[in-house]
Amino acid sequence: MSRSRRRGSAVPVLVLCVAVVAGTWLLLPKVNGGYGDRTGDPDARATVQHVVDGDTLYLMLDGERTRVRLLNVDAPEISRPDQPGECFGRQAAEFLAKKLPKGAEVELQFDAERLDQYGRTLAALSHGGEFINGALVASGHATAMKVEPNVRFYGQLRDAQRQAQQIEAGMFDPANGCG
Image (cartoon, rainbow, N blue to C red; front, side, top):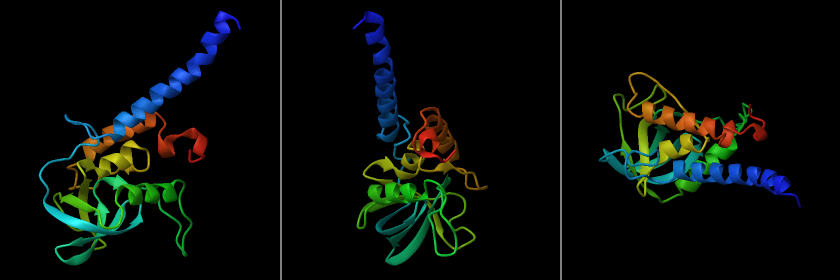
């Protein structure tokens, strides 16, 4: 095999290795400001009951079953009897369910408004030291969403989304057909 041919075949492998390392780096908790970081002292603690979709779940909070919508995160919709699902919706819901299985203990942080227009509690979640909202966006399973006045986590999530887009993670991967 010629020397130039061997060098040419190594380039795709090197690119793949760099992408895997970069993607893993985004998903792991960091000590100083990474996307997987805990965001600070919790405002509340709760137990996961079940995941509804990629950005909504039920928690047992203060002894009550509470529907929670993740702050500053927008995941694609899953299919429902009255509407078709969006591309990568099922994968986003599965990702969240894997991160937060039933019975998992989570920490919640709130922003300016505690409830949305549908009566859902708005919160950022951490589990085992990992910022779940950030993990969803950094992995390309959701996008950053700004809804005034709740912008506490938006900047961090916007940066995570840019990184996910650059490495074509999750829904940003052209091979998945979501584009």
